[in-house]
Image (tube, rainbow, N blue to C red; front, side, top):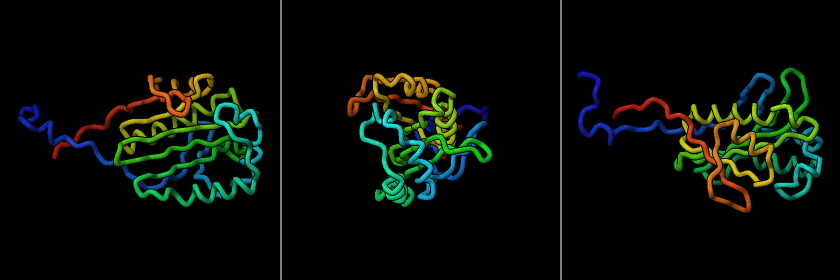
Amino acid sequence: MDGAPRPGAAAKVRRPRARTAGAGRLGSARLDLLPLGVEHAPEMALVLGDPVLHEFVGGAPLTADALRERYARLAAGSADPAVVWCNWVLRLRGDGPLVGTVQATVTPARDTAELAWVIGTPWQGRGFATEAARTVTAWLADLPIGLLIAHVHPDHHASAAVAAACGFAPTPRREDGEIRWEHRPTAPPVTYA
């Protein structure tokens, strides 16, 4: 063969299926992304305790007990076997404090993942959200996942900047008042059946 695909081969090209195992520990230059656990609730109640963090998403800060219950549900995983919840807390490298969270809701059968991030008020403006979101975006691209989605309030300029820095682009679609942003990671090498 001369390296050219044979006629009809394009119809047999397969994108590798995403591995659906739960998310493990990830790392970036300044952050350890640790799988979320109930033991993180007391510290995260302090990190997420500023009502300003709820300006764009609604709701109010949760107590440590309420977070513990929420984290237990999240750590148990989705009741839908077609959906994988990946949740991390963000710890400054070494013995640093927790500073926020990042999450991905992965739906392998749809080849999609939805991302979200939040950084506690004292640590905002330092690039931690971008660093964590880029780490998870790269991890998802390696799974591989073909379409990454984020929802950003139209007035939340900092979150829009994070999405753009991770390769997302706004779409005309709105869901619950938020703009849907999308990113299609570079496809992995094709395989032939």
